[in-house]
Image (cartoon, rainbow, N blue to C red; front, side, top):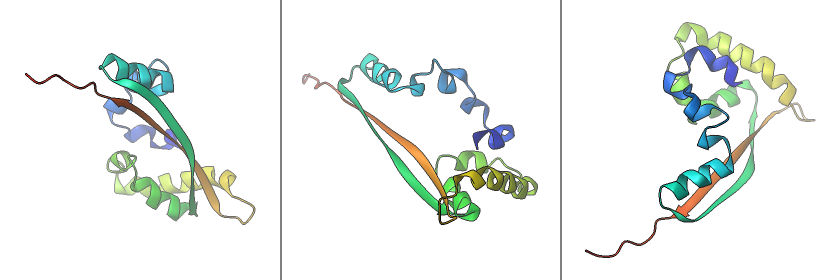
Length: 121
């Protein structure tokens, strides 16, 4: 679905240091290394898959606009929204379950670390 938003993705979200394969955000190890390099200890990553059952394309749009993707939505001209939603609907056809509802899976990752205690001055 991300490619459908391509023309409206802000330049800073295209930066290969943020989205490329060598980005610290592209893997658990990269995120953990970034926190350790910042001084964190006891660094660990936990993750899970969240089933997002929007039910239909309108539900997907509501969900999408309520996530970080809203930054991209805000850049889509009003005249282009219907076409974007239509193309998204074409992609979502393959995400229907046996009941015909659209189901999307979102991978969630938390990388956590502890800041070492500082000694009082």
